[in-house]
Image (tube, rainbow over all chains, first blue to last red; front, side, top):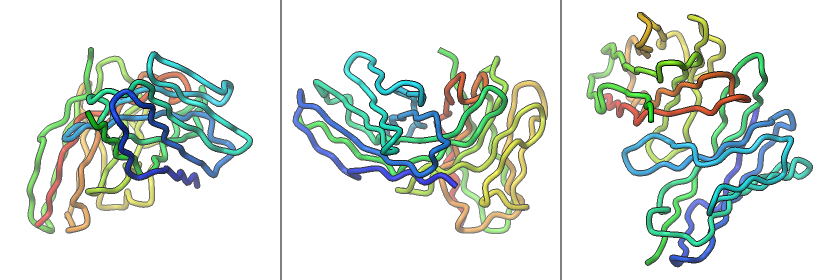
Length: 115
Length: 115
């Protein structure tokens, strides 16, 4: 089955600086890679996702890059703000137009933005 | 924005008792899931459900677990005889289509404590 590794487990950055979180996956058939943000007492909330037919996707201050050859993908947050403080999870799955597949999550990164 | 809602937010039960966790997925969604998160650990897939049947389940989802969509709006997870190790946060999720076409939306979870 799929295995997703995530690093670092904790990350502290100064407000305004950039944060980068990295994940690797094991199953070359995986083709869908979402990132979730989890705030205290809440469920994971999707912040960005990427499919294997593209190498990079950006949404305002958030970007995700994917290297299929190396089987790793990264989340980049620029101009960090205090409200970015949360636990971030990467995930991977094989999805098709014909059925749904389970998400395999990474172990999470606790991001703390220092004012 | 439509949300996945889960009740109760916290459930305390004694070992050996049955519990039912309830979820109301987003109304036009067709795929339903349960995930769990043991405190401080990664989010783990339990089961996916489509067209009134289980489409995939993990090794965690043994005979003690069952899911049901009793009517057009609710989706439930039943644990027949709870064990201490079932203590976790249980998340319901739904998606409009298969992963490849639409993302998962998670509820805020039910914290299950087995004593």
